[in-house]
Image (cartoon, rainbow, N blue to C red; front, side, top):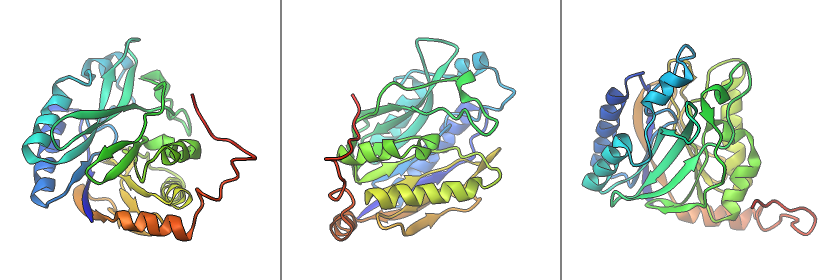
Length: 269
């Protein structure tokens, strides 16, 4: 049994304030014997609609910048794995990447994923500030299992979760900043459950709360059981991840094995 800490956070526009809050959450998670702590999308800062692409670009850093390196030091000090998110500088400013980073309990960056699907929908246009990632990142070993990364709007595209699962993921981690609105909470809950059930995988979905976001960070087990729903509070919760549960569900409900790959294929370069 492994313990995963889920942070439901209200990021402010102040990057340093959010960094300090993140360090406090890492310390708290380690104090509760968690093996991995997961932060939501836009952990680095809230970007209001009124903020220009150039203003956001000034906040952005490289993966080896102060924000991530400070959190790698906190991970190493506490001997805990961490999943963090940043605005990452790109080669085409002022656009920046929406990036998730896995840090090992030794303080080593082991995986960097840039969000593939930008939220150009329902009245939003992330592509005015953000740049799309170019590749799916192979699932990576973490203290709680083999984890595949996706970010927020990526949840609406089942191909990504399936490819990550076929490539070995038994835990899908989806840092999110899910915008509140008509039917949005229902979509959030339904798709997280669906991605878990169809892949026989745990899904860990830490979400932003406050500002324009709906909260309700969730963890769902491989059979669709909701293990955590954090409602509307800014907080951190600990959930147990049981690898035996993954094997049990995938044996009794062998959806991956029963796929008709002789008829259809799902692949990427």
